[in-house]
Picture 1: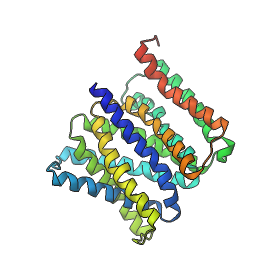
Picture 2: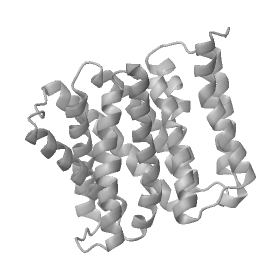
Picture 3: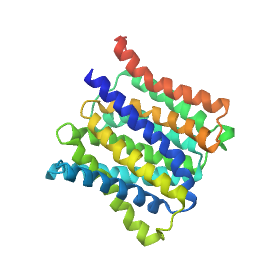
Picture 4: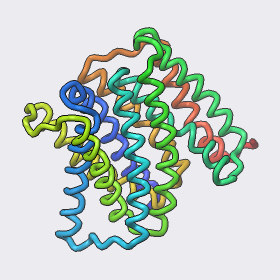
Length: 289
């Protein structure tokens, strides 16, 4: 029951991240990528730290500081690629490519952790790549573009991020790690924002509203939940649940921005979803591999 509750909570975080695609897209026409990231993560990190200090829970150990900074650095790099990718592609395609991190987790586990993966995992990987190709080559989305490649690089980094978070939160306080992680992304973003962009405090009402939702809901709350839940939920299972992020993202891209998905894109999305669910289904059924 505890594991199920943690998975349900993790889905809440995934839903919040899914909503971030449609909230972020309008902001990128008014501000630089680093400026956007600095606003979102500095505010989100400060909120987390202040709340934890008020309730007397923010007492990070050296290992928690290290874990927060390492995972924060990976998250920072992933966000650079994902946010720049979003500037050059649609919300729907960006969301599905981001969600394909599930493809890379077993590959990384095999290459770097020397953990042999079952045959059905590789079958799922091939299926997911086919589905990903159908999504990115869908004519109604404008075909494949540079934004898709940029987003894909960020997705590989996310796979490393998921595995690294698991490494630290299993033995350390996940709440402290989440706060340090988010603040690290914000501070790393602030430096290039001040150097190469021109941050302004004169923001539109839409920008203020979206940034508040992104900072509080999609950052402070979402990353706190995700780090907490990964104490119980494995990296492979976490990446599987992450696949629902692009589904939320595509739905909100259609609902809020009027973006459309063609038949090919829908079929590709179904293939990706099927591919990511297949390993768990076979494992739970204990079918031969």
